[in-house]
Image (cartoon, rainbow, N blue to C red; front, side, top):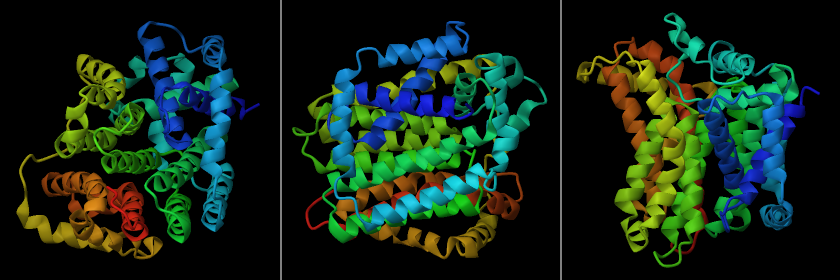
Length: 430
């Protein structure tokens, strides 16, 4: 019974994703879109003072399932397309996911943030049957990061309510499910870009294996860094797909899919919101021909993110929950050498097996036309983090040692995607 809520939530996300008008967009992005839509439903229920009771959530489930026969029929076609060309790379990816699932179920990969942040908020929301604003406004509650977006704890709370019990194992498995979604996102995205054969399988195996392997070693069950990394990768691939097409041939569904992925990214954590804003700027500046040809495409991209970010921002401002980040608000250039040395030390740590050195390929990937968009996706947030380390009042060495290992997880999957695209395409891509 403890897994019932998780299974219902996964099924709902998949079904909602199938019912959204996303055209040729694959199952992976559709699943992320379904999670965003369910999050919006929870936020709307909370705003309308509708309790997140099991009855209310089951009514929501019935409403989603009603008349879904056509969506299920189309879903079979999407599954067939998604699993076509199954190969050795997919097998490697699924084995790595299974290993992550095992250490998660046996509670060997629990993220510390789950203990004092995401899990605590999820449990409080579940008990309150909604967003517990009283808890978030406790003066002593800064350690719980009350200013962070609520997609992750909202999902935890809904799963617990549907199950009728708070089960850490069931809740922690959400990140395992997200790595399965990453597998679908990568194999479908690379296929749409024309990457085939050995390059396609190598890309799937390396990206999913990298994420699952780090998640096992660095205890990523129950944290929000995995959701951010996965949605950032999905956003880069969607930008790539859109940029590859001409302004006339790009379907509106691709822009809407990108919009839902940006919404997921923006509500995963505050760093995700910064990355989503950057990707929005990339879309505005570097893909003008796409949205100028049909201005409604701009609404398709911005609409989903605005629908979930604006209510959160208004609530945070009205309750005075948006706090500073410990920044000195002035560049301390004298610590540049210290920061660079500390970052390089983390990049060359044994658990990463030198993989972060792949980030040094970004300048080359930025020059190559077909990988420029993916390189931009990574470089923007990297610059923001660099400025943060140069302005923070925290000790830079300790700050970097605590944060950079997880920040690298945000960037490396998208960087590997860019390398695979550069090596695996013979025709013009993004």
